[in-house]
Length: 116
Length: 113
Image (cartoon, each protein chain N blue to C red):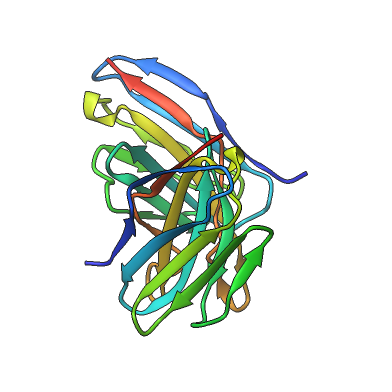
């Protein structure tokens, strides 16, 4: 069955370290998204990609970067982790058709990141 | 700035009750409104609404969109403890960020036995 996976599921790191969260989908979806979820803020978009070599900044992109070298993967990198980046991170994907981008996104299981 | 507002933020009911969750939106070039259910982990898709007045139904859950008044409701009848979750509403728009979801903060529903 097609799916979207994230790794690691839990991560504890220290302030200043570089951290990369992995997202892998087997739906062959063109569109991939990264969100963070915090109490009181809901889900906020960090970065997104509409295809290979395409990346775009979302609402809360400062301190994060992504790269898209293939259809299946969109890794999220925290260049220098800060305590404010302690959060739950969700990856999602959606399909593009000839008619355009579809709106239904399918979410991965999430990564809980703690920055000490 | 585009925004989606959900109310109430939290709700406690007893099994068998009927609940209505609200979602209002201000989204430029509005395209669709989506509802998700989030239990302990990833949000799972419930409904996507694009047209006013057409009810979408799945079992005890139903939803409708009013594009004139810019809101949607999610109804759950005969609630069960398994309905306890955070319900998320999101809008999308046409344009450069087509397909991106603009989320509300969610409604936390607790169903007591």
